[in-house]
Length: 243
Length: 243
DNA sequence: AAGTGGTCTAGACCACGAC
DNA sequence: TCGTGGTCTAGACCACTTA
Image 1 (tube, rainbow over the protein chains, first blue to last red):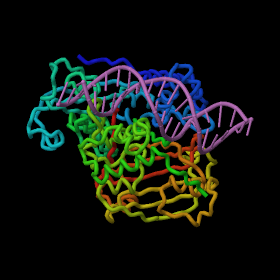
Image 2: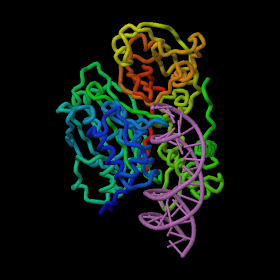
Image 3: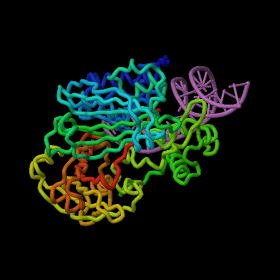
Image 4: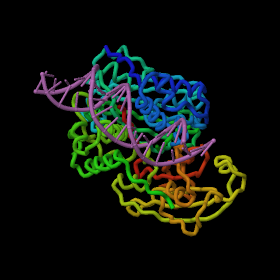
């Protein structure tokens, strides 16, 4: 079983503030309470409040002005993704204004290709668990996502695997592994016939290909992802914030 | 004139640590000194060391293990970009292993299109300063970058503008404006004849289109960018790190 | 048991913006 | 001048890993 750690004070404060921004208790463009007011309200130190605000600022939710105050980003509605939640496709589809749904196309075992065996640091032909899923935005197919994990990592019966879990949680639940970091290559691609028939792309449209590698804290490759993204329907939109 | 602020203690510590990672004083995969050792060495508090290490961890340079230590990411060489320096094309070309160079194709005034006037919150047809530049990797053209700024923002004589400055510094130097955040749309595109002739793309290859909007702390749109990226030569590669 | 990073506190002083 | 966020300190205690 996985240990559910009780949330830290900072995490709880963060959740409350995110919620207040989401439901416009703190409305877009408006000024939020000062650091000292917040630390009084929550009964935590100013340092704790500051670590939370720093995180929200990096994600572009708030803007801070020395000598003036902290303000909710007036464009908070446009921020569909930021580093850290980038490849949470459900969230991404939602923030594009669609209702997400997922269809599991296949869960199967197969042998690793040469590229996969190199990327995962395993033997050529070693057995992989391969999951292919299709994400829908309002019933339109938008992302074809496949992930592979070496079968040797799987510690729980695989027949129990739920197709709707994000790869991060699959690794936690079934492999007892934590993803420490991920490297993503973004490429532009002209879809082949097969992918086009699944994503229903018009003929002359290019799509985005996202190649992901997930690593543990020991720099051990845990899993690979190969995702095809129809950017005619969905915006892949990043936020960068400074200070 | 721009004020050159003396660097904070934390920034100085960060620079030293980044340098040590870069020149392999702390070699990839190895353990670096503990927080207390670093705070002793630099004569700063542990909290200061921690804020620096937190930043390096988010950028994927180091991995931290509670109860064990802090380690240099063994894949530090693969990390070509991270949130915050994402669109520093010179850095991106360098970390792909090429020598970067920039050619300024044009610096001119022209009227804003409808889309541009909406995105910048100005009148249709208002005058824009438009800069188009071509980035080379080892003499191969890889990125076609154009940026526009409303002429009304420009406060210094424009004939002095150097074509090699990143948009961020152009806004600082000539408009006295600071970019607080940027929103980037990543799209896949089939290059038209014109772009293809500049980037020298093979016919059937798709390219990446990066649409950027730059904003001030007041949520005022400052500039737009439209970049075409040849991902056959250059990897657009992001890092995400957790904890 | 010892040492590491993780969390949190209480308080100091500074830099900046608005009044 | 006052209140804001920015920086930094010294120290406490906890959670985890390793030996």
